[in-house]
Image (tube, one colour):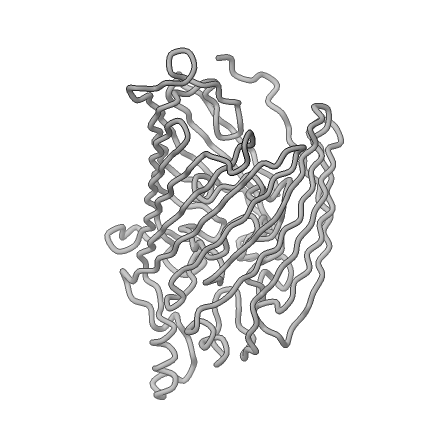
Length: 388
């Protein structure tokens, strides 16, 4: 996978970003048979190929609000990052971003598990598995996000386009009946004295041409359908909602504890991310405090589950865009992942990763399976960073 990140700071309020990307490979079993798939950077439809595409193209505008209280002039320094170019931002501010972007560039972020390049690789550790967030096959969408930040807390709202079909590459532009609503509240306060921490509470509601597992089951049982297929029972404007909570807590000496829990309406088909209706994870990471080399490591446990109707659909021979064995002896999918990433030099890092998965695809008749990965990552630094 290769990504070219480009950004331009137009003034002290406006940033423009354009990312070009190429992602190839089919993954284990052509990315089929696991809910918590082992590599977040693998595109779920190998037939798309590795031709470069526009991953992100959006503008963000940030304005200070009256009453800021932090730092000189009510501002605070802001370290330059791939998608953050302003050297300082108002403590009390409103930011609006619009264009092509990733929903999880803004929502469900977690310092311990959100970076598939240098941290964990599993889908349901880097993201909340039950967050069926609006996205095309490659993980991006078109939308707008508004964020309000104040000292100690933040809130954000996002409206996104949904794909036309489950795991589809084309967007549904009928925004009256197809869109994703996202809201998140963030509290920046640790539970350990002198150590920062964050809690984020997430809610979302998707509107799309989605199918009902129960309608598919009923039609098959009554003989109206000869094949059990949730896609045959889609209805425009159907709703699917869910909620999640993520936390992170610094514990000192480079150690960070983190976790997520989430649940969604398992009666409506999984549509955009992965086939998970209930998910929980907990883990710990370590980051070297050396300024010359940023070594890091981590270990996490994720447990994924299905709602009753989704489970019955798969047990009776139904297929989703990721799962379908023709039968199902149900068991929660459990994943333990550990990694060690060693910084070498010049932006190069090498990593070893191991994942142990029991009841893959929620099927007790399969697995367990152990997946080993070697990973090389290269960041090419900006030779001339923008001046304040």
